[in-house]
Length: 204
Ligand code: SAH
Image (cartoon, rainbow, N blue to C red):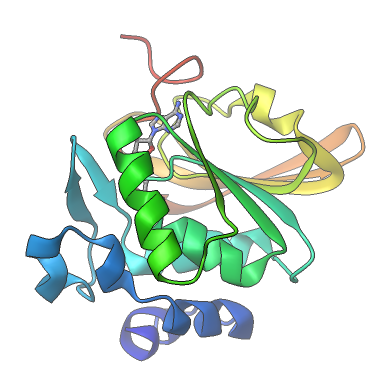
């Protein structure tokens, strides 16, 4: 997976490649999908949600540029897989999931894989009121109609946020870098995530 899906497609950050090789994705996919755990694809988790494609997780983590000291917030725990990878890359991870059953399954997968320090919260994470701000990095693991500005307020002065932004039919991974009150926004990789719900999600 690391060689074919990540390195060959241009993931260069050695810490990200290492983290991806250490986290056993099969523990995070539903039992009946274990054989597909290393497929080059997103996989269904139930409840209409998916575990992201490994390449997309690696690309998002690379864009966050983590060095190991950061406090990170993830919105959209899903399986807990991306949270486990973030835990390998940063000092502390708080992850928020709207669906209690998924949060509970993620909690046990994270414990099983040695990522017991990850804080899993249940609730609407789209406003960033989970965990103790500020965060050095925020990863939004669900598609947002527009950049969730409330989350930007939870970033440290030199913080970074990565979020898929665009219509439900397809988004781009947007990277926001904060320097004090200035922000720089760059839109990159095309992607397709399940929708963010809650206060900063799509109108019903
Ligand atoms: N990072 C995950 C993939 C997440 S899929 C993984 O590695 O498996 C997106 C998740 O975001 C879904 O589980 C969905 O329930 C959750 N979600 C959607 N809107 C949310 C919100 N406002 N707050 C918290 N979680 C949300």
